[in-house]
Image 1 (cartoon, rainbow, N blue to C red):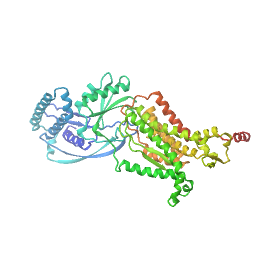
Image 2 (image 1 turned 90 degrees about the vertical axis):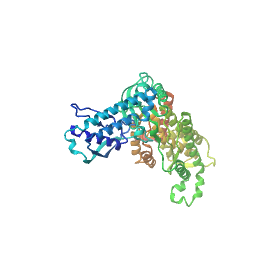
Image 3 (image 1 turned 180 degrees about the horizontal axis):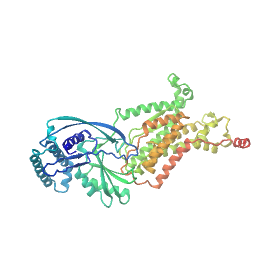
Image 4 (image 1 turned 45 degrees about the vertical axis):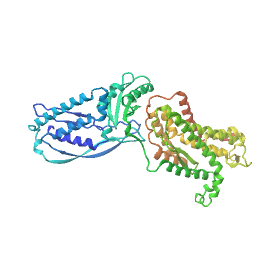
Length: 546
């Protein structure tokens, strides 16, 4: 085993350069007794802890390491030089200057390194480690396959990892001793984590207060160089702190400009909103382009439904502005069944805490449900403007518990199965808007409902609820084309985990949780069917038959 130490050191050093996305966790410099010289063993630890509630992808990576024996100890000198360069990076120097001893420490380290190099060169001529000298000037190529776990701690953020942005050891010591502390977060251990460091320990006091103190200290020591996350470890449900260089966090970019893609989706959504309110064209979609003049008949319905969708998005924008959250351009999703499925809007920056996320996620559905409910009541109360209205079969109200219950309450005995009913078309237009809000309130993925569930109950519970919801939608897709369309959309576009917040431990206030629960219940009431007959006589006849 001792004969392979130099080749192992060279292979590990080459592996360090090849696996530039992973961290070199430890280096050991054992010395040999009896004047045989010194050899260095490099231990390469590849680890990544998933903090986002999903299993990291595992892939096999092949790295070719060129190793050659060197009887004069040049390999050891090169490794020592590399180690000395890492330790004297600009970040380390800046940290040392704060302690007022940068120049003296650098001079001492240089003298020590020169002495060590002289000892290594003096002993390399007599060094013979189990026949390594017989393999001089022979170069061999080793291919090593390593099983590694990959996965970014910040989904939705593109990390640019290289050696120049990794946190040096001197900075880590400052973080442990001067940024964290007994009054905030007592560090017991740390682990390399992507481009930063994950600290485990004991959280002291209220999480929000501790996070504020740690953030202020981090700002005072390093300015805006690093970003702090206070999260929950999914392995043991204990708080962990993650510090990552800010320059590694870059928003994802798209090949097509956002505004161009959003405008294209918006135009198609306007077309489907018009088409949805013209039943004649819905029966034969291919005839639409030959009868474009008929689309004007669906203008009123498209305006009402579009107004509800627009108010929904305005609610998000106002809440985001109040919480300091930056949103991307909304992508309106077209649907030939109900006109539109609402909009998909990216969160560009990092949200501060779960309460801010709850405010943002609940504001849209709350505004949309409020306007849709008012318009629905007006549709049931006001007579049709043309005196005729829209003639429908009352059984259509069985498709929604909320709408069916309101119809039974407001229309009374006029609502009977098997009889035609004339209603104000505003009822159907408002109902479509309520359904769009309800679909967005489904507690799954990165939908508004998924964000509401995450903000109220945390990452672990919301991830389980999301899986159950998608499974139920998959079953519903066997009987409903709307459910099929939506489950496909969620699976491919919205099922990803929610990006970590700056501080995920503090629960929102109870009044905001009440609003979140109300949003989820309203969505459920709109989507669930109304199971009771509208005509009480039918229920009586059913009892006699039994």
